Length: 83
Length: 245
Image 1 (cartoon, rainbow over the protein chains, first blue to last red):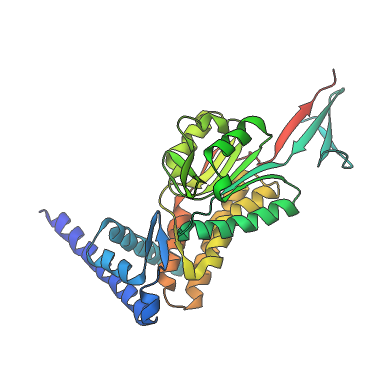
Image 2: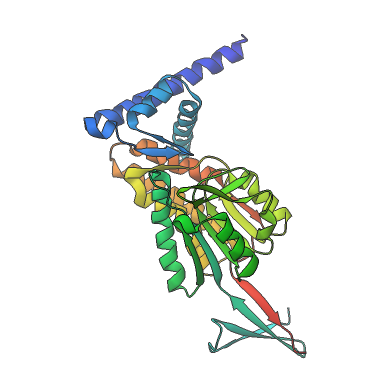
């Protein structure tokens, strides 16, 4: 693995951990019942908050997509700050 | 441009305009015929959301004087959609439901029914389409434009919805359609939708409610998937030119 690939892998892992932390914060703020209720849809799939955490934790395709969504938002917000 | 536009009081049709081009009088009739397709599949939370959004568009269309063919629930079948597109006047197709690159779905016998696909996409020729569904702007949309559709507004990937922020997602999903029903161009509708997604993202973040970061991220994601295909200056309304014999 090249230095670039190693760095990219490391960054992806940081972004994944940030997403996990974000979802855990969400889960900690809601009741046990709510954690098991469908909270969102991405395409044809529905997810409870706990399922979402599992997707990111296991680095599935949906998990990767969610990490990407969170990253996009962070970039958007940092752009707004610069403006 | 030598055209002079004179508004004439409503008679049998919703709106008349007389165009005087040089010395030849031409009568143009603006038509407002919409086909609203909104399935409501049992035990499908996504279509529960899209039905909610479509319901508000239905009301808006009626308020704005559109003639509406309303295919909801099991009436949103391929047979009924094809019948409407082949045999009834339709200027504007509004769709809310599931989709993928090469299929727009409706509903028949409480199941998903592919209502527009490669084999019948030519039915969109000459018409304007707006859909809140996944991915169709990558396949059906370009095919529709190639087949002669005026314009196509859709999403280029899997759209998301966070249920505890349904109002914000409905607002974003409907923004373009409200503009088009007002008679704005597809470019104006796209711009409004883009900005509404941005506003709703900020509104969600400001709420500080649980899960707001995920909801805002999905809203931004949807914004990035929004695609306008075809003529940006096209409108959803139709126009019939009546020339003197």
